[in-house]
Length: 153
Image (cartoon, rainbow, N blue to C red):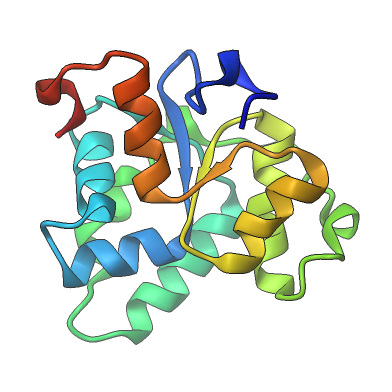
């Protein structure tokens, strides 16, 4: 993790990319680190970066899992956070799940930390030095940067 933003794992502008599994985990455990991340996006402590492809996947997956609701999170995909550039998915063919490649490509294109619990994506950081963290690692990095407890939750 020492090869991007000051070795701390955080974007200097407070931007993050949230993988679909973070939204799913947050929906089932409102006290989880994933839920804390979603809340930080909701309260504008963090800005979520997204692409039409990542939004579409999140909408599809969340919509398939009762009792989760797309309507409960749709407003988090704010226009200011949209990355409209091209994602080069072929560069990530070493990631076995083809649906995860769009998240890695967005992470690379924007150099924004990707927060995920997906083992394949977490392993990708070792291949490409991508800024990819688990929710737990994100909060550890936040603590190391000296963010107060109020800013973290």
